[in-house]
Image (cartoon, rainbow, N blue to C red; front, side):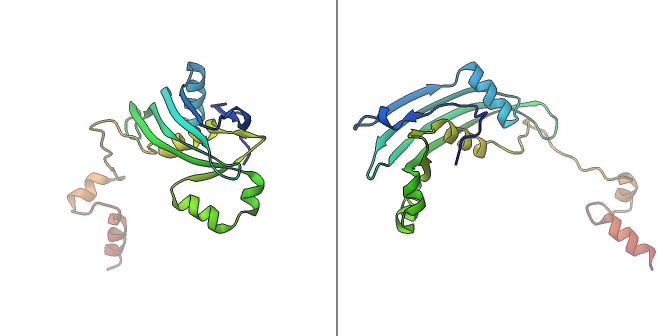
Length: 183
């Protein structure tokens, strides 16, 4: 999988930069990176993004990255459109494999990694694309229907007061009215 050209987080590590004992990284998104992430996610804003992870070599030229991310986002309430603050806290667990191993690996190896809870991603151009992984985790974890505290959607049908007076309301009120006119 190739990274999109406008990836909001251009965070990657060359395989040659990762020592045998691994590489520990703590990152905080800059204001510009947070703004790009918020725009790409189509939220009002990304107030902050903090990521910590440890990349370590495993067998056969593969690498494992484990860590945690915390993002503070501001979204629009689906009912009132008022700003809603949400916090995304998610683990990072991913294995990076050379692309040729992914293409020619036995299903047993791949299934074992997936069942262990790790995503398996290709190593592209001798680089581990952590920024893309962080973006995908945040985008999958955001609330698709955020609601402000106390916000409640009230369904109002056309001619609702007349239907309510007759005791007919809800999604099948129109059908009941139609059926009643046939008799």
